Image 1 (cartoon, rainbow, N blue to C red):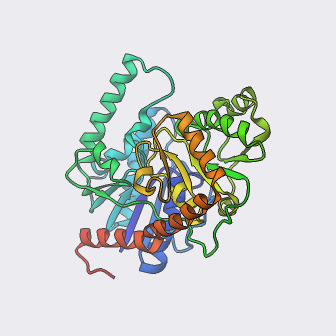
Image 2 (cartoon, rainbow, N blue to C red):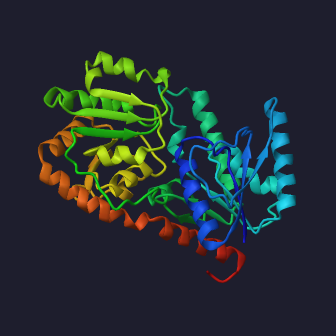
Image 3 (tube, one colour):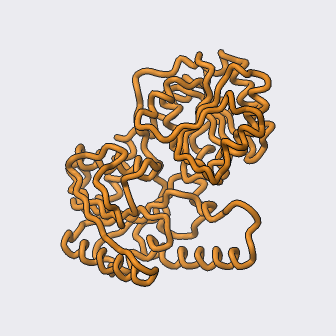
Length: 369
């Protein structure tokens, strides 16, 4: 089967890139799919994650003013698809243009849309003006219009189902990046968070919670790995909160698995999520997670007080109390860690890849392999 993924870029350290590297490689290596990835304005072949050597790549160059860019992009996509003649097309583009690919291409074959973020991504920092609220409403209207042309609209969590009214909705979660034989000892005085500096990730909230933790347990450290943005002012906030000595900011690293193994607690302070793959990665190493019960993902992954802790979204004091409770109770920490590692087996790559395989086969009326 010839399967084409349409994305923006796959050279960065983001979640979508990681997910695609896992499932596309699995489908090519284990199921024999002929997979092609079409990118937009990606001028490098140097990829952050490892993709199977069996994959093929095509880039559409579209520069200039907005109208010129869209015209070149549409024209480039049609040209690539005409040459490839795919059996199935999967669009992994959370931007508005992704919703209109079936109309641009004239739907040459069955098409699937993969939504990797919550609609809450439109929520921005600060008060939103009337103009911005109207613009968002128009954008959602266009999304609702374009999305109905897909054969299947795939979201990551059960909560995401509430954001859309399509009849063709389906939930397929993200696969685990790894499931190691080893697990964390949970004895290091280290708390971990992974993700880029942004309003979405809520690190400002995490730092305010950490102040309470650090005052009680100054020998514990918080390590945050992710693309650093000075505009977010997190280093300044840490300094103002007088917690700089116990907080470390690091850029993305390829060996992030090692950081999970060294951690004793994982924290996710996001205001909203598409899934929260970092939670499953931490749990795969037997690390108990504390997360805000934000839309959407954490409540699908964590069973509260059993294999992790869910905190009411935005309750900074309760978040701090959650971290402190796991610091103070090693037995509780280790018990949750054991259950966490077991709970995420349902996200193993072979399980998720088979879900995709069955979906693709159903669209092309071919027998399952």
